[in-house]
Image (cartoon, rainbow, N blue to C red; front, side):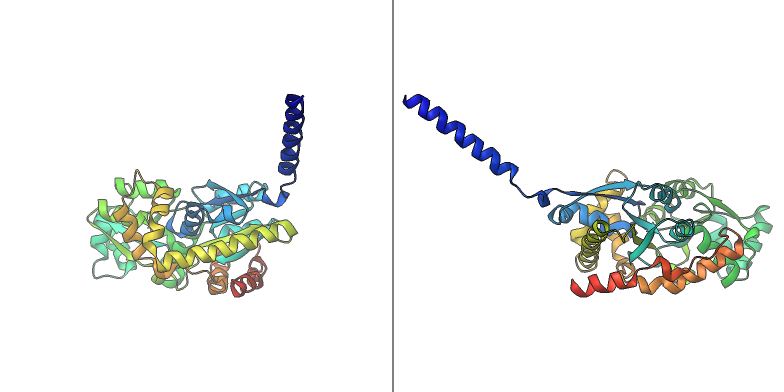
Length: 342
């Protein structure tokens, strides 16, 4: 009899326990967020958010999807395969012109891109303006200097052509501009198959460590003050669920930026892990970060003017057929509201 009572009591207890488990609020479920990014220092906020585990605390399950160029990430975004995007801004203008519902809600970094040179081109540039350096190089080498950027439509390619043509009156046809993915551009420079390359950190630190006769020819600020770098963009931010998720993501983005700027030593391990601990050393990440802290900027309003300049230039080049109102791409009010409430 006692055994039967115990069995009935145990059954009741199990049923109550099961009911309690089923009663756990659905809010505890994690919201999946697919974020496309490119492997550069300008994506550092994402690596810090993921590494610190902050997203899970906010109920977000991040899936980080790596691309070699923003133009590639845009294809996935347009197909609805991404919920957010952390990469270059110009491809987003093209996507929006084609009806993709995407909005930039924050900057991530500015003045990332620099032009690094080596060998005969570096020697020709010593003590001379770049137009003279190109002419001297071509005369001495019997060929045009070869410069690696990224594919047409990307920020690196457009910025290089803008700097050559608009800022220096140099015909871009006087150099051989080669569109390569990020890793390929770095490898081409290391191998000596190009004379210069438009690179970002940490690639800049890596190539300068390995190629002793290399030097930055054009800094990010010289290319263009407030040069637009990586941005945080949301897909279909007008939908209530997406807006709520985007607000959480933006709060984390701001928090990560503060950590990077104030305590780069705490951010460095997460960045190293994300960008390749087998390729980069902790010392290289530390140096790349220390030289880039001022570039981590989040207010999207700061880059609007520069984006307008580059889009106007792309239209002039013919790489973009129709101008998209730049103001339509940015949701400045979203940023102001979240930043003020943080």
